[in-house]
Amino acid sequence: MSGMVRSRSHRYVSTLVLLFLVILFTELVPPKQPFQDIPLTHQVSGSVITALVFGSGLLFVAPEYTTRTTARIHERPASTFLYGLGIHVGLILISAVLVALFGLLGTLISASFLFVLLLVSQLAYLSLGRAIIENRVGMLLVAMGAAASVVAVPVIRGPIGFFLSCLGLGAAYHDIGETNGSGV
Image (cartoon, rainbow, N blue to C red; front, side, top):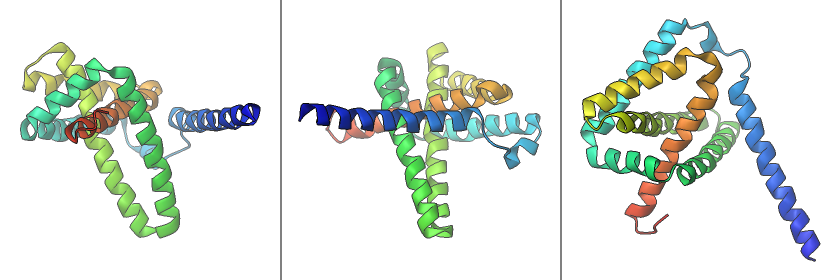
């Protein structure tokens, strides 16, 4: 009986690893996308503006939250990344199901997931800034520079962006868990 349980759990683990690799390679080698026709300068400008808007919103509207979550990324990077990875994969699957089942409504709901991803991924960029300087404006400037750097180099754009997004999601999840008293 333990052999069946072991083979079943081994099958689940291998399926999860395969799913992760598919998502990773989808990020590394994306098919021809409409955004590839946008000049690199516009893509970099867009990432800097996104970092400016969302980063300044986090720093100046919710400074305590931003301080807590960026500190959490520095304190527990591995668990923060792993939780964020699980949430990221879950959001991808949920978005696919929503779009497939509900069409336009599912697309609108999935777009709200994208908005949340953009917001919490800025936590990772801000944590890079926090590693260098504690000043809010300095943190924001470093985050904007990091966002521009990630987008400017096409080879690292997918993996590094995905990694930072997972860190931000994991930090937000840890904060929600600890705020509710569950001690995630």
